[in-house]
Length: 249
Image (cartoon, rainbow, N blue to C red; front, top):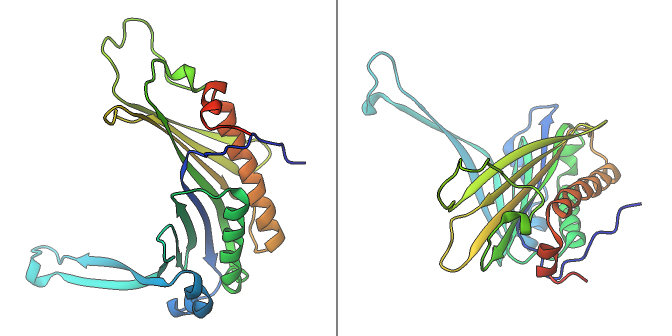
């Protein structure tokens, strides 16, 4: 049974991302990515084509007049009308992003699974390399005297080493979940003070390499597992003082 986590009435999440990275088993034309375009455009009406470019400079005397420029379409980007949700699809990955007001895990997961369903015809014929979720939190303070008042993990220095006030700092650590192929990248950073406000960014990226083939049930279960790990990292790292700022219920 999943652990019951505190409910935040005002989650500090500013960006939530889900990515599926895959490898096609057969060659596929890029236009095949538009198979369900008519349905997708009802929810994501803004579509653009994505290209990759290359510039070849001849040797030994390169010059602008002799340079060869080429481009190749690699996929599409879809954006909803409010421009709060978007996703990109290519022959290598699906990346779903939502920013602004976070409506909760159930809504986010439902949107991810609906998107995955649009491309199951591709995922069924692919090797799944990785599934990941990434949540970027921005926690605002009027004033912060010690990071340890708000966070259980921070940087430290011996007395007399840093003799001047610190305007900003950042650190990263990577964890491996035992008996799994799951890793967690965590970045915590105090941003430069903006007028009278201090912003602390808490970035949690959970990556799973355990799934190799497409299965809707497996994908749903993996997303839940990644969420549990993300929540464990988040709530273990914030203090009761920080928790109270977001009106737990």
